[in-house]
Length: 241
Image (cartoon, rainbow, N blue to C red):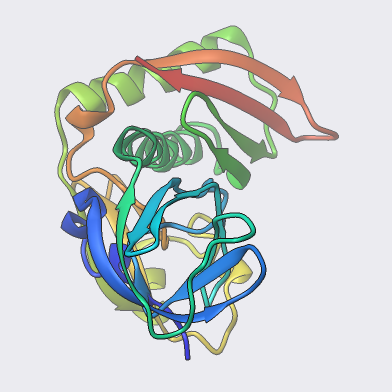
């Protein structure tokens, strides 16, 4: 039995913080639920933390992982068994930071692609305090960094809407080049994809992460550093204020 991912039901669901669930499986230090709001590590985005409460007490969730079954790490001697019911609560400050950071990553990735000869996003890591994106092929100079971040901040201040939809691979490819959406990284067996869209296709990308509903929520986007990661690849690190 897999875990229903409540945070994927809609963009609005990403703003929910509490839920009820049934324990379907346990290990020595982990709990698997029939449904969860906790985002697991994946897609470059870090996991949610929070707590699970039941008749036996309250447990801190320190790590979340998995794809079909979602494993919530709560430590040994958790006292839960299959069939028990819990109340879950995620750490909202951490979740919202990830939502803002991940949406900012989509925005920056789209701007760099459009502004600098189709430079692709080939990796990213989303954290609550700072995040990074790897681009290729590109070699940023100071003017390029300034342009990219200025364009991103302009879009943020225009408060473009962020929406989600489900599209087929063919529908996506008709709007965006496959290399921009990293379509080649997705299993060919997956025909319909959850799409996150910024404004009128300012960016359009398959993604199972959590995001804000409008760019204005991102706030101030600040450049932190750049670093070469090999021939033609550079890493940009940023934070939000």
